[in-house]
Picture 1 (cartoon, rainbow, N blue to C red):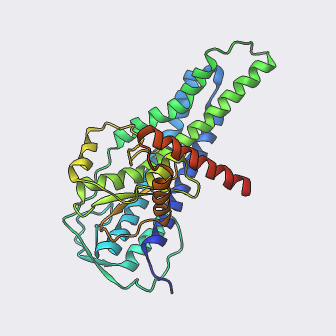
Picture 2: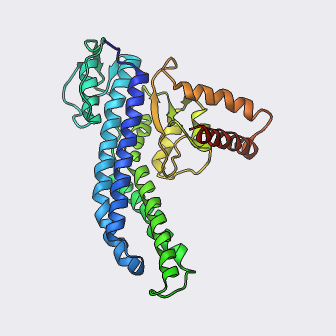
Picture 3: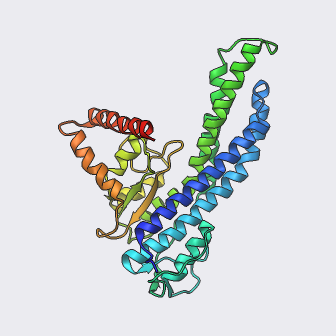
Length: 321
């Protein structure tokens, strides 16, 4: 019988979030194909947005709930206490078991429940800790802007200089190509917005859970230069004041910002509760590679060298696959 541990839980968590993002991306693209009419872009864009926003809220909620179930396990494994259930704060529970936490996690993943060798271990429920509130209005505004910019605005920008007749085959082919590309771009934005439900929850814990001391970024199997660079930081230990600065609502665009996620990014953040916590081995390797590749460099030069290094690795992986 295997043991419930942070490494296994984190990989299941990452894969679960990837599935959530992919599901929304598919729904966004299907709606785009049904609704968008490039010759009537304003009206059809409004119809498309009305159609997809309920799906965005649904999948964002799934991402948030999965993150909540994951955090409860990681906190328990790290410091021996956990938070109340995400949607049942103040329910009076004083303790639970790792088995109960694992069952809740499996339910959110839509996986079969499993018995672990440490399932019977009891865990205290920290009644003083709170979950961060979800700002659904701000999340909706962010999603609306992201979807519109990556979809209809992209079509408009790329067709402004396009001239032709609706009975011109070449013109229609080019219009179709632009619209198709924008649909895939919008689907990528949908993927990102779904996963932001869970990411926002975990980053927000810095303001509500005093036991959080830092973060680590877990990338996918083939991360871009930016994601691998941020993952190379390993555990980023942060002050409470730094974390609370996010409450201004301003999003930084600094390439060093550990809370930055691009379209189609598959990274997930994980909370750090102890300096002895498990850190992804990939992050340790990226950290060693960063020191080697960027030795003697700084700022933009270091990032350029790292980008060249990661892009070469990705090309080699594709050539050998």
